[in-house]
Amino acid sequence: MNDKRNDQPPLSRRKLLKAGVGAAGIAAMLGAGVAAANAQVTKKASHKDAGYQESPNGAKRCGTCRQFRPPSSCITVESPISENGWCRLYAGKA
Ligand code: SF4
Image 1: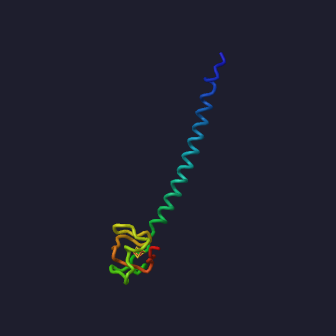
Image 2: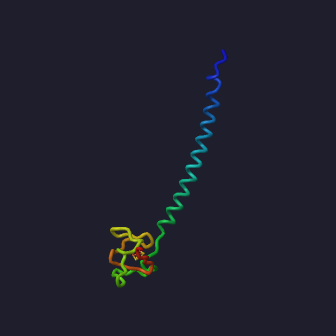
Image 3: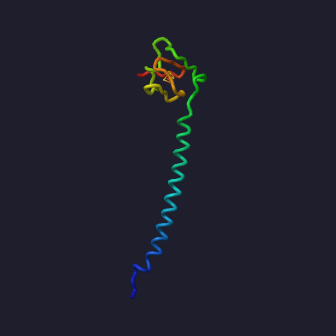
C-alpha cells in the first residue's frame, strides 16, 4: 500500500503555502511601489507656484496647452483650472 497521493499532499500544500506567501509578499511590494508612484503623480504645483491666472495670456490658454485635461484639470497644476486660464508652465500643442 504505497499510495503516493497520501504521501505528497502535505508537501504539496507546504509548497503552495510557501508560494502563496511569496506571491503575497511580492504583491505587497508591488502595491507599495504603485502607491508611491501615485503619490508622486498626484503632487502638482499650486496655482500660486505656477503663476496660474483665470484669464489667457494672449493666445496662450489652458485649452491649447498639452497639459490640459478637460473639462477642468491639468497634469501639472492643481485642479480646478479654467480652459481659458493660463500659467507659466504652459506648453503649447505642436
Ligand atoms: S500647465 Fe498651466 S497653462 Fe497648461 S493646462 Fe496646466 S494650468 Fe493651464
